[in-house]
Length: 245
Length: 245
DNA sequence: CTGTGATGCGAACACTGTACGCAGAGCGGA
DNA sequence: TCCGCTCTGCGTACAGTGTTCGCATCACAG
Image (tube, rainbow over all chains, first blue to last red; front, side, top):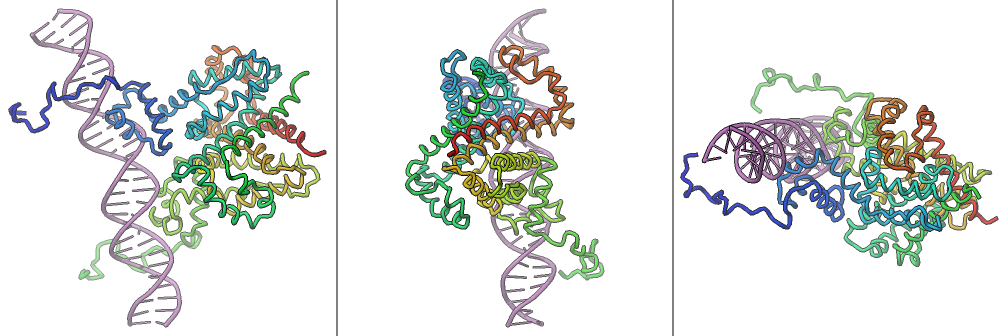
């Protein structure tokens, strides 16, 4: 307190030495926080996101974030809703409802695979996702299925998207473990193949039914695409039977 | 060290005062640890399980557990496999494949709802669940679908169980938030209803398509049962079309 | 009686989410 | 020019986490 200003220990706190508020990252705002959180989640996975690390990336202290976000759970909720905006749902007056639903389902899947933490968070809270983007996603789905002529659109939506969520969750988990290995998916599959064959050797039907032949393992991404498309066709066929002629 | 034994400070460590190893909980074993972990997970949810609390419930220190289990993740893996034994899959020679698959799907669902943390853990790791019970579950599924005559049983299994997993995940998340409220599901729904109607009022098709009418909200558990059954029928219908006649 | 290997555990480390209270900045009014 | 007043950032602290390490204790083999 009585220390003379000029002999103060370095660094001297002063208006001139104090870092100017960065203009490219003008301030700590809720939007900036959510954006950076999504970037970290995408890059390093869900368990790598901590309030301290997030604060550091924004040139801020950890506790500063709590001025704009009540809690970490709320931050995750905001991140989910932000990402929900990426899901594309065709307009309700699309001529071909099957193509339109296929598009919406595929868009959900690619979004979930682009942000592999999405399904995890969705499975954790379930409710309370009443964010505007998620609501408008649901609304556009309802419009699409209603226009398609389903007498109970919400049941049809639940059927299709339970499938989509289940498949996307499984795929996202798989991609996460692949990413953790540091290898490409093809490399990882190749390294895993002998183990998989060995462990399933003791199970007759698994060995016979398994798709783990080396021929198919060459392009695992395409295999996943086909598998998703196949199941979706199954569900849509079943749904088509319930459409009033 | 040089302290005389009779004047040692209380409590005197002695063979006689030392607690006899409890016979009803004879020792710390891997099985006992997994069993107790499952009990805690079922009772208090996934975030309530910590190694220290688990140790305390077993009259043991937290770090003692690491003699029998390499890591907490491995413990969760063991818990998943233990619980996978509860899933019932009818024998492959069942006369009615639809009834058999419906039984297996329903058994998976009830197991997932009895242990609401199951879907969470499954979505987190995806791979690496090569435990004996989970493998035998998959094997019996493969046997069932093969016997039913599906040319690509693994694709059919993926289609059905992606749906089952997706629906179960959503339901488990819902039940978890209900449980956290301390109310019964019916009470919770009743309290939530005005909010749900208000928020969906701004969305035309959601308001029209939503099942949130007070009449149906009387028995939400039955509503969930019906919804699950409906979607499952849809998937099975679609699958039946692919069965060689 | 003497190792010897398995088992339990207290202390410690590097983290986590978050509550609290202080410091300073910007600003409207006297 | 100064006084409050609100808003924002942050250092400190607390209770809790998973896990490592080294020491003490035990049952049992030689």
